[in-house]
Length: 632
Image 1 (cartoon, rainbow, N blue to C red):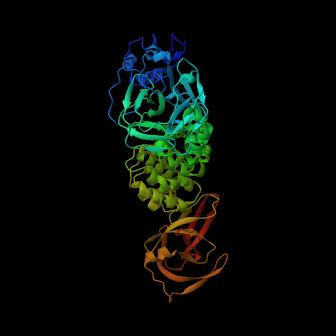
Image 2 (cartoon, one colour; image 1 turned 120 degrees about the vertical axis):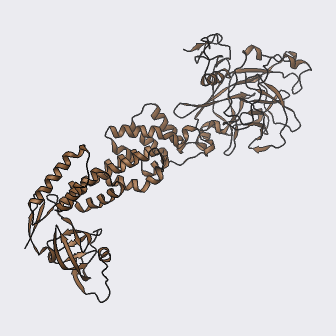
Image 3 (cartoon, helix red, strand yellow; image 1 turned 180 degrees about the horizontal axis):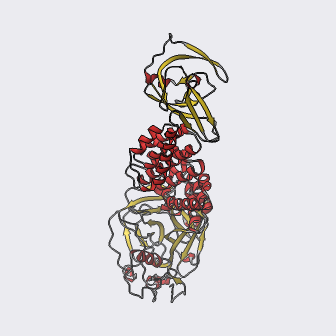
C-alpha cells in the first residue's frame, strides 16, 4: 500500500522511510517492523535521497563565514568510507528531515542548492535509471554521459514537489560529463557556477546533506571538454557539489558502475551567466544511441514486456540482432546486451512453433542472428523450424554446419542435440522410403547407422530397404540378429510377412520400388564389392563408376580398350573392362563387360544394362512397384 506524506500529501512506495518529494519522515513507512530485505533497503534509500534543499552561507561574496559559524551546521556524521572498489554501486543514504538542513547565513543572507533526482526515460516511456544532481544559479547540473545513454526524456524532480524536463545544455561527442540546464523555482537563490582556480580550496557537500568535508586538489587532472577531472579514493556515495567560498566550482560524482572510483569534475568554463546552450537532449540521443542495436533491443524488450504477440516480438528482436551496436561494452546496460534477448526470443519461438506459425521464425531469424545469440536452446528451436518448413534434410545440414560452434561439447544441451539429429535422420529415411527414392534412403541409412548403430528404428529401415531390393536373405539375416523392443513388434511382424512373400517367389529376383516411380535402384555384388545400380532396361551396357573400379583394383591405362557412347548432348569415349562377376538376388552372371563412367549427379551410382539384364526375363508391374527377373 502506498504511504501518504504528512507534509506534501504525495504518495510513496510501501515501506519507504522518507518522502521521495519533500524528504519528510513517513509515519506509515516501515510500521510493520519487519526486517527489510536488501531490495527494500535500496528502494528506501533511493526514495529518501530525492529532493533536498541545502542552504549554504553566501555572506560577503566568496568570503568564508566567521569562525565558529560552522558549528551551526546541523549535519549527520559521515558514514565510514568503504573500500576503494565497492562490491556494488553505492546508493544515496536517507536524509534527515528537511528542517535540519536549513542553515541561516550571516547577515540574514542565505543561498540554496536545489538537489534532487534526475530521472532518465527511454523512447517507450520506461525508466532507465536515476542519478542525484544539484543545480546552481541558472539551473546548471553535471550529468555523466553514460547515465544518460538511451534516454529521450530527462526529468528533474527537486524537493517539495514539481518536476522539470531537461531540454538542452553543453556537451560534445567524446565528453564523459556534460553541463545541462534545468528551469525550476528558487534558482535565483542558488549559488552561482564559476570556473575553479588552481589556488582555491575545495569543499565537498553531498546531495543528501549529511556529509561535508574539505577535499585535497588532485595532483593530476585530465581535460575532458570543459571539465578538469580526476579519480579519487574517497567514496562520494551518491555524489555532491564542490564549493569554493560559496560558489559551485564543480561536482563530485559517484562511480557509475560497480567497482568504479569516484570522480571530481571541476568546471573549467566561464561563469554561469555567460554560458549558452550548445546542444539538446534530442541531439544527444541521436548522436549516441538512436538506430543502433541497443536502441532496437530496448524497443523489442518494450514490446515483449508489454505483451505483444510473438509474431510481432520475434521480428523486432531479429531486427535488433541485425543492427550494429553503437555503444562500447562498458557503456551498455544489462538489457542492451545480446544475452538479454535470449529468453524472450526463445519464448516467442516456442509459442510460434506450438501455434503452427513456423514460417514467422525463419522470416525473423536467419542463422547469422542465431549465431549472434550463441544460445544452444535457441539454435535447436531454429533447427525445428527449419526442418518443419524446408524439410529434415535441411535441418540435418544446418546441424552439421553449426552444431560444433553453438552446442559445445559437455553442454547440457548436448543430449537434446543428439535427440534432434536422430529424430531428423529417422524422418528423412522414412520420407525417402515412402517416396521410393531407395538410393538416397541408402545414403541416409549409412549416415544414420554410423552415428546411431544401436537405434532400432534405423535398423529396421535398413531391413526394409533390403526387402525393397528383393534381397530377402540379407533382410532375414539382419532381422534375426537383434531383439527389438515391444514397441516395434507390429513393424517387425510386417517385415517378416514380407520376407515370407519373397521366399515364396524363390527362383526369381524381385526388385521393389515406389509405385509410379521413374527410377528403379538396387544393390548388387560386383566381385565382392557392394555397388548400388540404377536399373536401365534401355541401356545396352552396364557401367561402373571410377571409384568402384579402383576398389576392384582394376588398372586402366592407354592400352585399355575404349568405346564411344552417345549422351544427351555429346559423344564421349569411355574405357571398357571386364569384371569377374555381378551377383543380384542370389543369381550370378560371370565375366560382365562394363564401361567405366561416372553418371552425372550419380553419387557413385552404377548402371545395370541389358548385357546383364538380358540373362533374365523381365516383368514390370509399375502399379504394384515390382520388377521381377526370372533367369532364362
